[in-house]
Length: 273
Image (cartoon, rainbow, N blue to C red):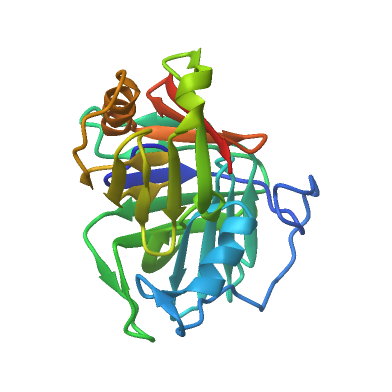
């Protein structure tokens, strides 16, 4: 899910026994163990350990609901896994390509297969879990049915994006605007220290200190407010780094390289320090 403000996701999927990223089974199995967050050591209302596990599992967005209990995981590969304590025990979809509504306020995923279907509506209007009282930034409505059902069953609940804990740590700048750093620039190599739990960043642009916050939802990565020292610097690397960070809108992590991008354009590449 990419660059979302409010999302509408429509997906239909196969009923598989295992997680969609690991198996292609098409059978259905009732799963009574739903993935519900613990409420200790909270980060934006959810447990840090819970979110870290979701991130390690490749989950991009999750939702939960009550009466009946249900859970939803949307994976970074755009696969969907739904579980409930009803006759719609589990529905998993393979990778689905998204589409946007005309006003770009909704991102839609749609797929229909013989063994079942699911519709997921995600809105950025805030939500409070009816059991725990936990606040979520998104309300979620799921319409799901098995292949042998005539009518959809409706599920209402709350959801949030899962921070990408792979972003945490120290990153050293390797290339900017497609150019490698010179030997002189590497003497004071720019670096960033990202803290995904606090959404804070600190580091250096090669001359001056950098500090501030950032946001991460799905593959979006934005540095809205950065501050720093203002010493006079030789060359222009510091200015180029500052400008690149203000233009970043999304990212990809490949082979321990953090590629910060604006759309499809790679602005700068960082490696773990």
